[in-house]
Length: 423
Image (tube, rainbow, N blue to C red; front, side):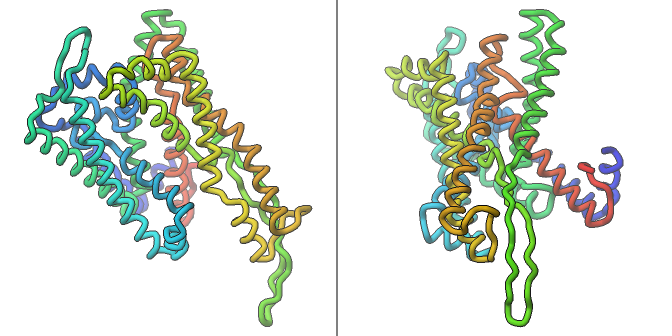
């Protein structure tokens, strides 16, 4: 491992990319600590500590939401816009044609995603200003996060929106000139920045309740969760594919055998993000309509929370997998290039077979996602802490981004005949 790091910095081009990535990350963390003007960060920090949807956003913004910093919106508006565009591409023929056009079409989709991100950022900024301008019950005292004036509201909205635009540009810079996917690296940085504080909070609660002897068990559980996440993230069902001999002009291409990998967790962390957004939606509405507070509390606590949250994750896992992987399109592509699955007739029978396999492997993947997502709630039930550094979507993102970035660096090393990380 150390030799691989040394080799990475020994290559001038790769060294420049890694240093550039770290510089952008440093700028991101600096912007996440500078609060927007006119915000009472002490009161907002206490409100975020209560958990709920603000606590969920605070994790993905690296703590920037707790002080409504310049990058207080985090990367969530871009993620939401990307997911919406991916869903629209599957149902709107024009967008699907653009996607199949290659680089030109993808550039058009990226441009629409940018505009949609800015629109979502403006909407979320206005929602924050509206919510934080209302009186908040903090530790039995009524306090205000923002003393509302029109000028102050406009300044905060413009600050948060401009911060989101700058963050989006920084992510694209990392993708073009740095290492890894820029947006993934930024959200990875935000989550990792919160990890020490979460471990400290969890350890403090455990020591107060049960003493020091339980801490080694927590470390073992955390390592087991990471191993399980890596196992599921890399798990795939390999379907054998046989290519027939073909004659093209005067050339005859030899047949061969390969496999089609179908991932157990095709949808990644998308079901957790979708399910969290849906289940916390009543809480957001209750912030504006106080008569719905009882219904919001019922949905987000106790047994109903576990049942509804699990059901939503399983549903969105199947839904998103169906959007990403179209068995009929895949079967047509195999038939077009003279390939077939041994024992399965080409065409519709192959599509039906793919559909059955996807349904079978998606179930354990979605149940595993639900188990990981419910870890923070279980930690609250047993240890009385809102933080769980080895649970939820955070651990899925940390492991997934780490593996993907290491693979990209390893590919760069192997191109130059160096040993990589995953040897």
